Length: 171
Ligand SMILES: [Zn+2]
Image (tube, rainbow, N blue to C red; front, side, top):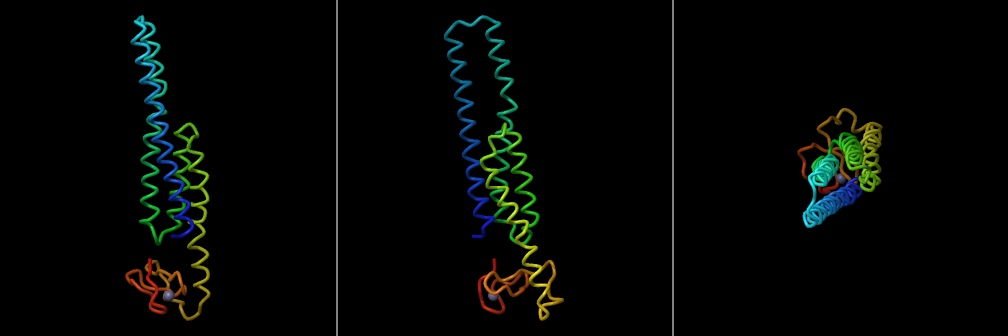
């Protein structure tokens, strides 16, 4: 597993656990205060106060739900996008940031891992591409359909399963 994948994996799992945890806490708090209120024979105004409190936390709960989906999407994309790591880097940083913003900044914890994951992913290909362009023998062979062997760095066709030079399995 590559560095950005490891960081993203940990960050997104943290994010998923965090959103589920906060969701359960919020649900329990609302549920408990509902039960307590009902036991105390509430007046109509007390019921109204309770309802408006619930309405206040609705955006936060919706934010948690969206952030939860974001973390799952990012987790999947991290392992699906193999050749467009630059796009993946942008997605991780953007979605991680949005997830943080819509969870009242609770998402800062996963973002602390998603940001470096995104930066590593962004830099990933550009440094490798630069290296390959320098290699005279491979000039003209590199296109968007090229993948590089992780072991010997030989450019291979995107359809190849194994490296043509060293036989290493291509990702
Ligand atoms: Zn190779």
